[in-house]
Structures are given as C-alpha cells and as structure tokens.
Length: 241
Image 1 (cartoon, rainbow, N blue to C red):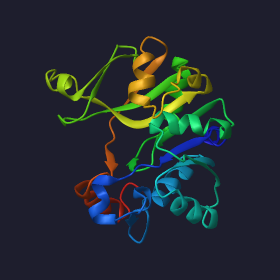
Image 2 (image 1 turned 180 degrees about the horizontal axis):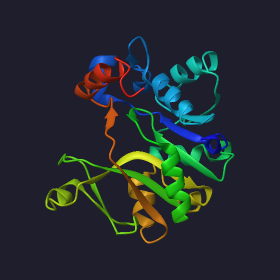
Image 3 (image 1 turned 135 degrees about the vertical axis):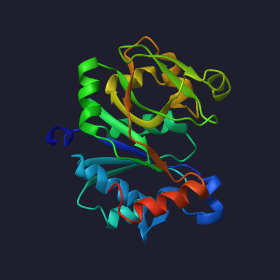
C-alpha cells in the first residue's frame, strides 16, 4: 500500500450538520463523539492504515473546532487545512483546496461517513481505466437517494434524481461520496458559488473518462440522529476498525 503514501487525501469537514443539531448542538459533525473521541479520528486512523499519510481537511462550519484539535493532535499525520469563509458546496470546497494539493492523482471523501473500503483496489481501478474521475458506488435499496447507471465497462452513463430512480427498480447503485481524481478535473469545475460536485461537475463529465468503482461494502454515516446512533453502536465496539 506504500504507493498511496504519496497521494493526497482531501476530507470534507465543513458541513452544517443541521439534522444532527439535536444531538450535538453547534459542534462540527465530523467531531461528533464516538466512544469519547471525534468520529474524524476513527476515519483518519483507518485511512492511515490504508496507506495514506498526507491529508487536507476542508473546513467551513465551526472550522476552528477541527483546526485547533488537529493542530494539537495530528495522529502522526501530515495534515493541512483549507478553510472556506463562505459555503462553497462540495465542488467549491475541493477547488478552494487546489493550491494545497501536491499529487497528480488525489482522493476525496465526505468526513461524516465511513466505509471499510480497500483504497488500493480503488486506485488500481482508476489507473487501469485511465480515468479522470472515479466514484465509489454501492448497491442501496433506499428510495430517498439519487442513483447511478453504469455501462458494462464501468463508465457512468447517467445520474438519476431520486424521483426518476424510484421508477427504475433495477437501478440500485448510489454514490458513496468517495472519489479518486486526476488533477485535470479542476478544469471542469464551475466558478459558481456554491459549486456542487454532483450537479455542477459530474453531470457534465459523462462520456469523459468518468467511472464508477462498484463495491460490496456498506456505508456508515452520521448525518442523522438515527444513523449517528447506529455508527456509535458499530464503531464504538471497534467493528470495522
């Protein structure tokens, strides 16, 4: 896994976490406690075990909570911070961090979710396809999320909004919020603010080396009180870590 050491990992840590406020107040949701430590700690340690060594934390809402903590507790990792002073969206947050990215191939993920994913396999798939962008996709039966359709070779051919996806029962693949990119991806980013990866970038890249890497693993996220409770039960017992 040593070849992941030289590739930057960006983690989106700026979300407002409105749905989780009843449980954590104004705390940044990536800092929500799992067994007396921040959720983000568990994620960073897992990624360190996967071979990553350099991280860029994209902060926004309650940025100082994240920055102050990891300035003092870097877990033995090389950590840089990219702070947005206004809501920039998922795409805008990555573009804001562009100046800090050192590697030509880099990774990004949402800081409020965890997946027991083999990142080496994701990297190998991305290289084999000579992809510009690779999205991790997984099967999910939920009707309240958008879905993704793939060609036999793994190229993404369409994104379906949740209403359209609910009409196609055979369409079960969803975006896991984990990505592998080539630096050239930034030439396709919108200057609008905020800028969404899903709506302003990916939707315009269909047919331009945009791939989906299908995995069988499940995704744990802490975005709602119910899912936060589930993550505490599973991760708090050390499962998956």
